[in-house]
Image (cartoon, rainbow over all chains, first blue to last red):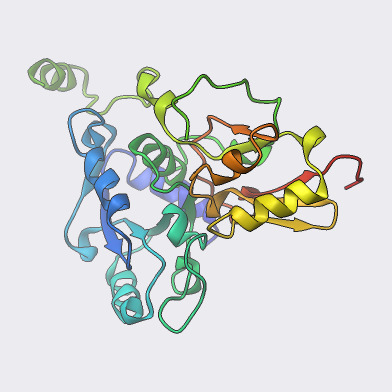
Length: 164
Length: 112
């Protein structure tokens, strides 16, 4: 099943009720903090039809944070196998995308070395708005736009503080 | 909450569109940097790659390879070369293709 078919299937089947299982594979917990904020009234994830579930067997989407430490590999595979299809794996944060930890005897360094990742969400941590965008991409509600971002100034205006 | 619930029952729509309105807090978020190709030399690019604590920046010949996915928006590159690096303001960067997050930024006076 291609990613495109998977996205269409999820939009069709889970358009208004998509259940998320979060999986911490060695993250520093700031990603988890941002994920928790999604359920707070300010962002109110549930109005969009997303829900958190504690059981992988009830989950449609696996939200994976952390650099995939080797000690967690078996648990991660079991979690993925326990989920009913169609399922989506979302790698969340710079650790999961391979930006922070190298591949070494303790970590795999990236999530996609163990699980088949469908959506990548950059950020350290990705804020609730970035996570919402990522969930939207996962169910095909929001169009692709990242490919055309240049990341060269002066395409972007000068920013007046507040930025790191 | 109550109004939202009653409206949902009446219309049969229980979810809302996203984004309902722009979030004004977004501009305070730390965001990945953007680079000025006209001011980037090989020396500056090497300096930026040296201060990057992750593996987001490296120089490949006449190109600065910038992995947005690996960037933690720490701001060290902006502190190293403030005239060449600025904030991008982009944070909604989720993608289904990892390779589109890797940007190749040409250095000054060098062909791609």
